[in-house]
Length: 450
Image (cartoon, rainbow, N blue to C red; front, top):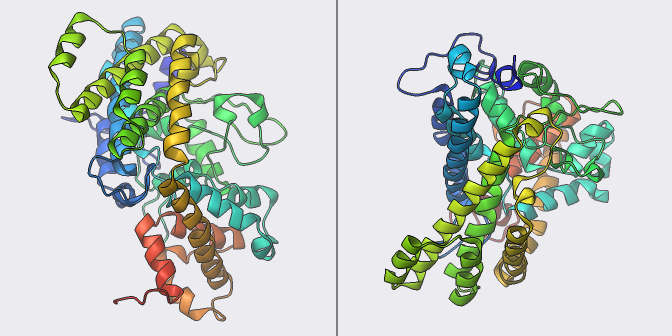
């Protein structure tokens, strides 16, 4: 049995569901995509910051549009790779009914969820939540937690929150376990960092160990229901739990990286932080121009439409290159020997061109006044909400008002860890606007209903 057959042998099974999935006009991975897109957690992304907070321009992306675009790019990369892999290993069709398009559908579904666990205010929100749990104020609340449980909170991670959201059913919502009950293949492809929070293994310079992606609350589920069933390769040491990535996870990462670098840059142009000449030069350098591209480009008049066309060509260039790199190094990705982001394996000149885009983005976009202000707001809003509701969940009799304000689905924890993690998830699941409004209301800045 090839490694591809081993990985895909149980990929179509659903979490906590032994029944065989029936595929009619949709593949099971397309069904996953549909389940995700109709979920409330996915809808909340429409009011979460991608780069620019509370954008006034309709052209600027939020987390929802970013996720949709990433899913589109991921599907393209997956389809290209699927054609090559299935052609090389026809047993995938003959024995498992895995077709080239299944690669695209699977990667696309995982891409759709890749930011579903992100808190308000983007990555600044993760930092704000982490800083609260590292503070002296929070220290007394964490006394009964293990080191790994503390690390979950003190290094709050959107990837781990995402896994919790899509795999766990809160007790008072349903007796059916498994969250969105996606296929095991989608859960594994989603798991960008398939490890627990401790020990920190970032120094090993492996992409899968750069961060962590599984809270203690989901570690047994991931190990027994996903990793073992899909034959993920362990890479544990010092009594921790970690696995090598499901190979298609590298395609999800590539799709996200492409969109992050290219589309954030375009958004910077759309709001006036980057001038057109800078964008035109940066994107043009990434593209392998031909006569057809040139002729069409010359016919476009509007700078915004020119930017759109350049963005599409740049993304297509990177899609083709990353797919080719994966196929050429397929055996090493399968075995886990190669554990690097696909964009880090691009030709050196292409990496330098992308680095220019990143450097300009940092200077002109990520350190712009609106972004810095929302980061500063997040460092005030989120810790305040956490402190009030952590006290309420641990000492409900002394903090009755805040305990009553905590939604019922976040009151089910038995241990201190479960209770505090539920509060962290409550705050993390808010949109930017919800967090700001609740902060204003409970601090008497703006009274509810006025």
